[in-house]
Length: 276
Image: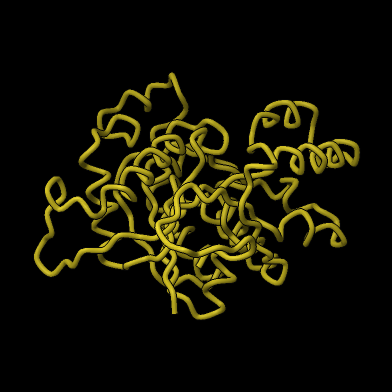
């Protein structure tokens, strides 16, 4: 049995970027851990007539939504780093000293290293340097996740706490998308009316050069788990969202494969179809 730790920015990110991956490894009996950096309290509130009534307790709501999402994916273990959602770049929440974006190096990196030492993953997943689509919390998740991977063995700056044992993950993966595949699929979705011209333009920059993708996880068997995990995030995904309206014959192709860049490998593991 191997262990995989996925480090995400907000509740719901685990389902979007790594949904079929987490479901696949959990179903196969591996130890799968999700660590979420922020409370998601700056997210939108969709599917509710009076969203202003929910904002004061949005962090609590999103935590419950995450728990339901993880149940859908078969993941039983998760941790929170406890930081406030940073909102979008240039907004007032982004300047909040308690936000994830405004944290120093040692605080969040030390917390994630505690999780690494607790769960002893062979592989750690975080985001690519752009954070997938440029959200400050996603960029910070990349920075903190990468730093923790390399600093986990530094017992000088991050001394072992009582009960801890040293542990250094073998592999670091960046969750990403193939620009070539994303462009082709989104052109089709635009043509079919599943997304608007604005949506098509807004997310045109996401992804990585196709040749940089090292691993593609085939999780087609777990597409429904991914969709059910999305549905658990009731405040975040509109019932009319394109992800819920993909024709059945395209769901496995569009949603069932997730891509990763192997950023660092300490060992001899060599696979284009597996992470652990």
